[in-house]
Length: 183
Ligand code: FES
Ligand code: FES
Image (cartoon, rainbow, N blue to C red; front, side, top):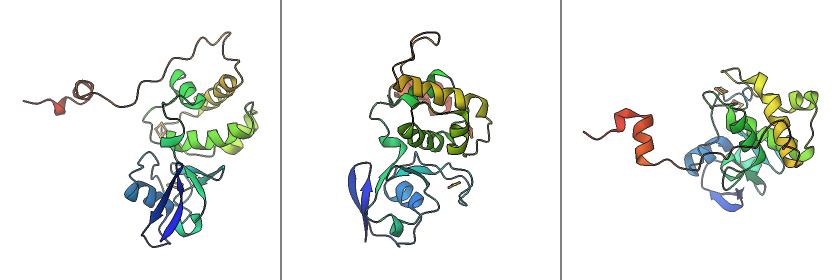
C-alpha cells in the first residue's frame, strides 16, 4: 500500500510500489489529463507538480511518491481560471493540445517562483516537446499569465477572454463529432 496526497485528497494505491506515478494517476485515479508521450522522461507530457517541483510522472514510482503532495492539471484551478489557462486560451497557444497539460504544469511551477520570468528562465523551465511546434507562442502566453498575476494585463493586450466552461453538452458533442448523432 502506497499513501500520498493527490489534488488535496489522501490516496492509497494497492499497486506495485514500482508502478510509475503516471499510470497510477491515469489508470487507478482516472486523472487522464496527465498524458503519456514517450515514457523515457524526454517529452514532458506527463509533468505534474510534486511538492512544488515540476516532475515527469513517468519517471517516478508511486513508492518514491509516498507521503508527498501531487497536483495534476485537473486541480490547477476548479474553473479553468488559472492565469496560465486564461492566457493560453486567449493567445490560442494550443494546436492538438496533447502536450499542453504538461507544459502548463511546468509553467505553473515557474510562475510560482517568479511571476515575471525572463526568456532564459522560461526556456530553462519549459523543456517539454511539442510535436505541433507551438513554441513561438509559448513564451508570450507565459509572460501574459505573469502579467495577469501581477494585475498588469489591461493596456494594450485587451481583456482576457473567459475560458470555455467545463464539460460539453450532448448537442455540442454531436456538432463536434457528427458520428455521435442518433439515427
Ligand atoms: S511521458 Fe513522461 S516525459 Fe514523456
Ligand atoms: S499542441 Fe500538439 S503536441 Fe503540442
